[in-house]
Image (cartoon, rainbow, N blue to C red; front, side, top):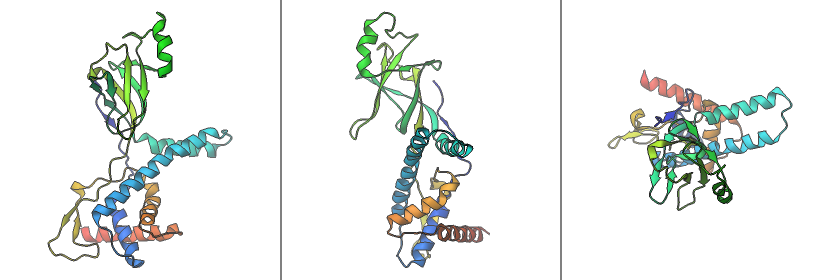
Length: 253
């Protein structure tokens, strides 16, 4: 059984900076206020949308002929953005005859048996012919699997062959996980009045964005877009973010 491996992003976006920047711009635009819970829901959605766009951009890049170093750099940047979500985790076995990948799976990579054998992935319509031939019939030495995508009601499933393999600890999965939900954690002041409301940021109960810091302006812009504010000049966001960071430093000093 392999341990879960998660690559941490050393240059992730700070959730407190984003929230305070959003509040500053809302205040300047005289567009009211957004509660921490509302901000958390919107931020989680924005992060997921940017994350999913990485795969769209990567597919688009792969369809374009590689003709220059700029192309290679763009592809490398996308790969780097995705790489922090690559991990390895344990499966669970369902008595109905299939394995479940980790619950935070976004895309499956490889399926591994007893930490040493990589299973060959096949399509379900290939199974009959594979099982009929003694040369291709799966064994514990050469196992195979069929992967079925999840639906709104059912999680994704991994069907491993031969069916004698039923021990969850023997099947591990390398996969790309979904980003964790964003949380601006807080302690609430009793009757206190702040420009950001009666809330004090609590880093201990917060969950940071997992996107690279280069996405900060896009994150803030898209969060504001959900609130009906269109920012056409990225510099507005950058200046507000610098102001929010400066205020954070002043509060700590």
